[in-house]
Length: 373
Image (cartoon, rainbow, N blue to C red):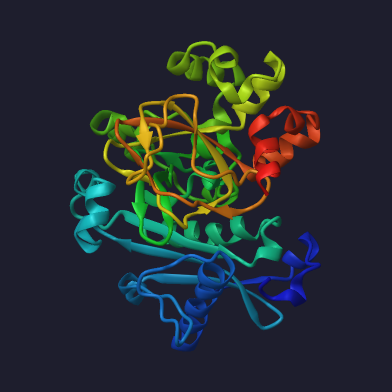
């Protein structure tokens, strides 16, 4: 484990962490080395372009980005990045995935976009508010530069955290080599009503500033598909159940993973799930991807390429099971049809089990996974 001297850190320790801007090249290099410790040494990811001699991870966009970091006792324990610009400033691939040229039409005379990425926290401080504090710094930078659209990308198991900040899904996910399946998300920085609704930690700062509904109104008129995806934390259990029912029929009757649960338990389990999409012929999983969840196919079809395995059909589990402990996927999985996946993430599942401790014992895929181990 990294930084073992912090193995007993608590929320009280988090209060002593300082959030700083990286000003010097020495600070930036220290951030790049921290990224390497988290992504390569801890999470065992293969990151293209990582420098295994200097043990650092950096990208071209770092050269013109704002880097924030968290420091405790002279050591970096967290970092986040804000890259602010216009549609033409970002790599073409990002521009295509996030449709940046369309967002550019909101105000062609200004650079109104930000990519809030590279959020990483020391493993012993992940159950503290440090992630929110780092992203609040990114939000502050965005508001200082009059950013209207703050984009990010999240592994599916982290979407509930990004929704808590105020982000929403805006498109099917994509594979980012080394980082796994990434779901595009968007924060409307001045949408104070939404920040209030999700109880965003950004709200305190937003209330001190002037907020206009213009960007939200423009988006609703010009890119209404950006509001297609329901925000999980604002969706009632019944509405979430109904959405899944539209895809699979009666969830208890038709989803094998729920076969031993009663309706109450099934509803509670499904409520913590996040619905995501994967486009046809896109990889949902690449071998070696980090797994902190269980993925259940609800619509479409997938397969393990190059093997003799049967197609993955609605109701089947896609990939490995990391809902109890982090693991890594052992096989590639590709969508042969446009697919909808229900993601049950480890952190919400742990919270659910504190209220419903009998649920894990009724989930046969957990018991089977234990037997395999």
